[in-house]
Image 1 (tube, helix red, strand yellow):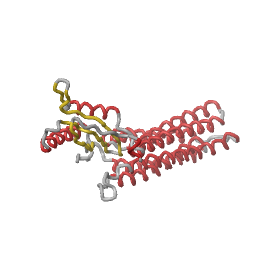
Image 2 (image 1 turned 90 degrees about the horizontal axis):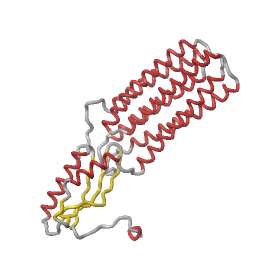
Image 3 (image 1 turned 120 degrees about the vertical axis):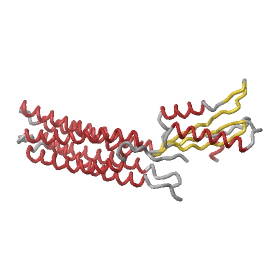
Image 4 (image 1 turned 30 degrees about the vertical axis):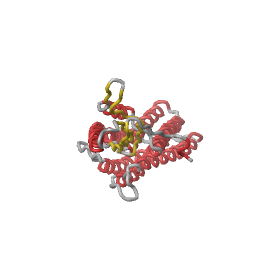
Length: 311
């Protein structure tokens, strides 16, 4: 079995998610204070999204903790899919926050209110946005290294939060320059539509992972290149060949199932030795990969997806 331990050159998912919880608390304080001093519904929408950030980070931390549990009798393939629940939960929270923002902004659009102390409000909003931007960048890097869906989802949400803050700051600046109070509510609605789109994207990504989506194209290409190095022909005859290659993702782990055909005259020991070499090469080429290889004689074909198999 391959070693599934993630590289350690970057902080672990748990560490970064703890940082995300702390940053979410700080940004909630900053954005709520910005809303309080300005009475801007745009800044209120920004603060509401930060509450979603906090809930999402806490839930993601729980799911990452579960995902890191070793395989057991009830979960022989591990608990890696728990991260997909984190992504889906975060998407649902984002959608809920977007609906709440639209509801609040619609009321303010019908009854615009003057804004107060815009200078302080903008400074607090920019500061909180900068914190989220720095954290999101670190989380994206760690998500790629650790292959963590929960980290990627939280990073994407933080990026959405950054753009939300940028939109709110621009909107409030436009209100200050033009005096058009309805722009504040309009910006809030635009923010809500943006995070609604991001929430839908996270829910979709989560559903694809739970349905055993195939590995990424570049990973599949690496698997096929590795197998090609072992395939062997003698004239028109295939001595070693591979077929029925099926892959899937499960959180940080990757799985591949395939058939390896070789001459029936080979001894079991020789065939097993070649299979072991193929497994080691695959696991070296794709970190976190678990390969299952079925040995078959060259003249035997197996059939999948046959309707008779469903009877």
